[in-house]
Amino acid sequence: MKIFIDTGDVEAIRRAYDTGMVDGVTTNPTHIANSGRPFKEVIKEICSIVPGPVSAEAMGSNAEQLVQAAEDIAQIADNIVIKIPMNVEGLKAVPVLEDKGIKTNVTMIFSSTQCALAMKAGATFVSIVLSRLDAIANESDILIEDSMMIKSNFNFKSEVLAASLKTQNHALSCFRAGADIITIPESLLFQMYKHSLTTEGLAQFEKDWLKVAQ
Ligand code: E4P
Image (cartoon, rainbow, N blue to C red; front, side, top):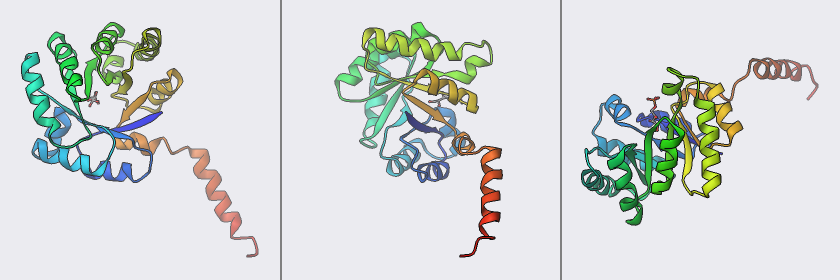
């Protein structure tokens, strides 16, 4: 079970990585725009904080442009993974990049068949976007389960990366289905540590401990 942080906020990444729970980072053009900083500068800083895979998105309207953009981004650091769009041109770019030793992460997957194609193309990671799907159909649980089944049926090597998780229920569904990785905002990571009974129970122990002769 791996946990990635999904943000372009380097301070959030530092705080999350400090917990010892974080194995990698995912970004997207929106996160980078929200950081207000130049793309390569942010990605370089993230790669220096987290040694695990850091996904940065390549932009382009055909496979050649995507490969060119990916090769440029891959120079930033050794732990870069290139996010590639889930479409015909994107899946043409994936094997080209993987053959060159550049890891790919196919993003914006919303169906099991898309997921199967991305795995067949040889992507290192396949990103299934849960909450955006939940907003229009209650299918995200089945999608993760199907993806794990497809991976196992054909012995595909891609890691199933459950993305766009907004709630602990999303995380729980992914853990139940055995998703390889979840990528989550910093806030959800810290929420997952908490339970009101834990807070209450620990506070009681602290209070009672003061009554014990030391
Ligand atoms: C994860 O890799 C992506 O950044 C994510 O799918 C986008 O998530 P959002 O739906 O929270 O924007």
